[in-house]
Image (cartoon, rainbow, N blue to C red):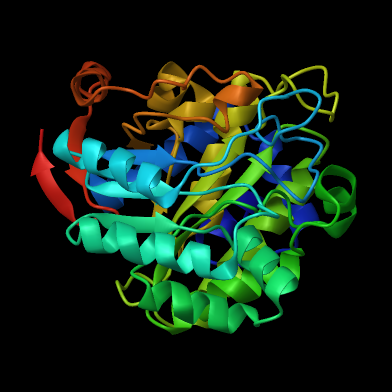
Length: 360
């Protein structure tokens, strides 16, 4: 029995062995991954109506891969007020957005109370809007800055109205790679602990992986395995009571940062990574091909290689576009639906927890 067959039968291997899956033909991996996604979701491709808001780009940490935070490569610092954030959220809600996604830099200027007031005021103004906020890296930063413990940060977030957490800050879990690309940021162990605790209080989150920079294939598989193990430890897999909703492989963007990576992965390498994720992460329901990093065309192709989600309309995207992604103005609902249909799939508008709202 070959490796792929053994993985499909549930045999457990280490990351270095699983990395051999990359040696399979892309169409073999794609066929297997697509069969898994079709068994789960048929020809459905999910998307949501969402708005990204990034309150500030002034950051206490320095990550080499980041083009968003204010630095000599991005000498345009800004800070938003709570009123400005609420105004943007309300404007998007009136246009049909059902989720506001608030992720920021690690601000040395905002107080702990500012964050919790921001979330509670947004929720007060828009009680029907799903509030997704605070990466585990931000949670860790607040813990380190104010000494309150990450558990209290998460409990206060929940009390302030945060409904779910995004998956940012994961990057690559290998600590040697983290020291090179994001020294000083949350450790992989703490990132996983933060999400585990969030799950334990009945909340859902996503998980990302930044790939295509200085990591190896083994590092990617190690990353996926740690997520799979964390999901198993939650004991509430495939439920709406806590756990990872989706895995999101984020393609590293090469412009305007200090990592100095000269080439991007090939389309085949990207699609193989998505297919392998669908094959290996059997206990994470959804694989997202995030169009903001992949581009809409490749994200649509990825729906035939194991992915089942495109993310959302976004409306305004600042983090990936700062590094060269063509996602600054988001994507209209009409364009999202048309592109999914033209690719031969069924567009499904979902909410933030993957409840199906309508067939488009």
